Length: 64
Image 1 (cartoon, rainbow, N blue to C red):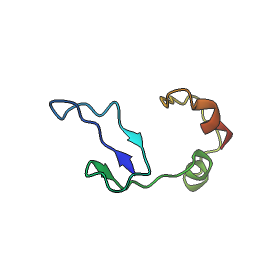
Image 2 (image 1 turned 45 degrees about the vertical axis):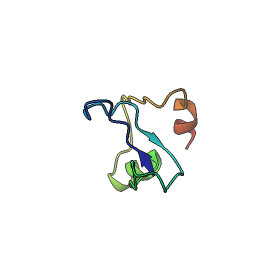
Image 3 (image 1 turned 135 degrees about the vertical axis):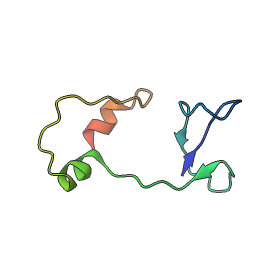
Image 4 (image 1 turned 180 degrees about the vertical axis):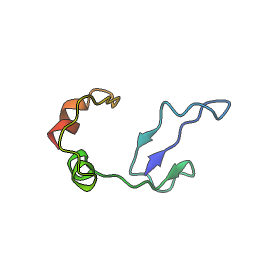
């Protein structure tokens, strides 16, 4: 589930985060895929540059 945090005016998506709380009305189900699977599905064999903004979890994301 993705928790949508839109700010006071509904235009700030910068603080959205993943949660297990399915009872919250501001959550929505989103499809996720690991980087390895995405690359395989799209025949990508090399990534030159990747921007990860995941609050210190970059290493874990790259490990798979």
